[in-house]
Length: 222
Image (cartoon, rainbow, N blue to C red; front, side, top):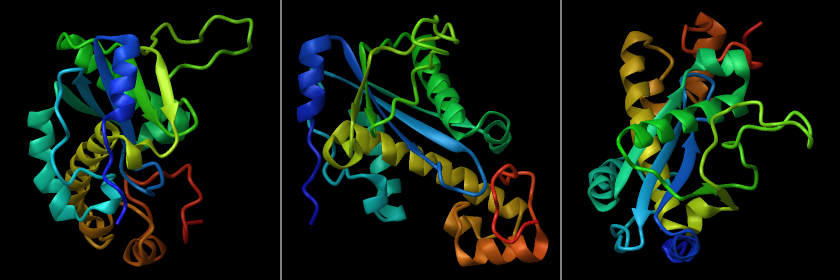
């Protein structure tokens, strides 16, 4: 069994930066339909160990994720999930859409008076910080997140990041289950917009819906 994630990395960063830490993970990047969603879990140096069973959302059953979500919400200092729609993904691309969803989440926290001192972001690419045009230019966006620390496979080893992935997955999944009622036949209540056989068959036979990412090379769609 995969070792349980811990707060070791998070506590190290909290000692360095002080204040609050925002752990961030995203879900829905590879889906063919629906939003991309960014989960944020905020903790402090006083936050205790994560609820038992917290893992990267991909390692948990749907039922277990749903069971853990309220435990995580009660455990952390604050949490939020930001979204960018399929239309926004088509308009600006997946990386900029991730940034938009993350920005929305952090702005919502800020509006509630929660100001993290540092962000712990899963992966090796900082998609959250707006890019420079060149090394000599100012940032192209006047919004800036707190300092961002990257960690590859943070969702596997860092409990707060794993918790963020669970909350993002539960919220996005719930949206796709609701959308499945409006667009039956694509199997979104099960596949959540990913490229499952039922979804691909419906794309070939019925075509796209207003929730599909039409800028993508969708299988079976010409």
